[in-house]
Length: 356
Image (cartoon, rainbow, N blue to C red; front, side, top):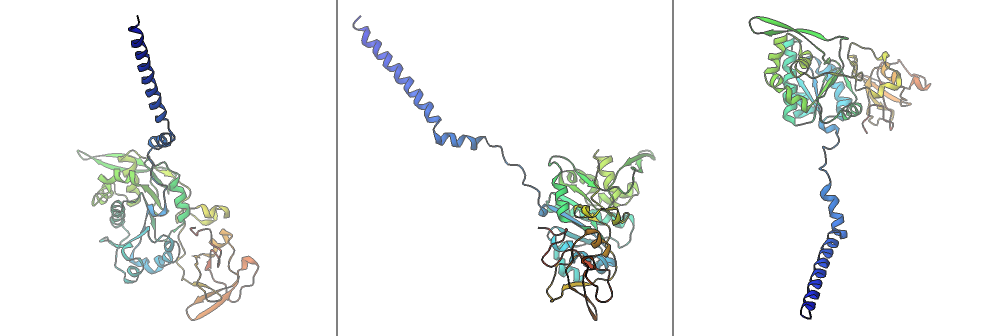
């Protein structure tokens, strides 16, 4: 009995020692350092960063006949604030445009004709250049559209990252029909919606990559010839008939088929694109002190619709003339003959189209 007692005490001490070591290990695992490290290990991986304007590829389609008449106006207005994102696709070299745009002027081998093959040729060049850019969104506009970059970015940010997106404005109130050739000299009637290129439309990269078998390289022109429809219709055909996608119509895009009077004044800053700019002669607006301004050379009707305050005095410089005018919308007298060109945004006061 006396021999067993020490052995029993030794066993008890050994048991207590083991329990103490286990408790010590448990408390070490709950030390402040370990507690701080645990959330870091459990944090999910960050998703893609929020869409920025530099993630958007904006393609402007034009032709040599409109280099001076339309493009210079765009370069002086919205393109001047989206130069890094905007690429101009034309059919003829232009030294002046090359100096202003550099590599963002893309001279295609397409015809200058306004025909289905010529239009589809330029759209194919736009699409391939976008795919090579690695950017997240492709947006197409014509050379007579005024684009609001801030509203465009706000619209694109609203779409989920994991979905296929084709957004624009249909020019018809019904789907368009096309005859799709089938084997054994047969045809199949198909119908689909498409966004009119005259108002502009956008496609995200996820969808664009799926379109490649019918839209990349020469295949876009082949697809267009297959259904005998122009470039914007071909886009809708590929997305809806080949991929099962759907156009998401947006009332924020506007084409030459509309008039600005349909918009209320408060709605103007929210629009992504506006109807064609007037092809009237261009005037340069500067401050009366001769300091340069950042003018928006838009039509008088647009300024009235916008409700923007104009500078109290600006010099409207016409070749051989210098006319000082005031804003009739601010109750000021117009000195000299009124002109159609006015400026949206005043000296020191950004207009609704300025990107902050």
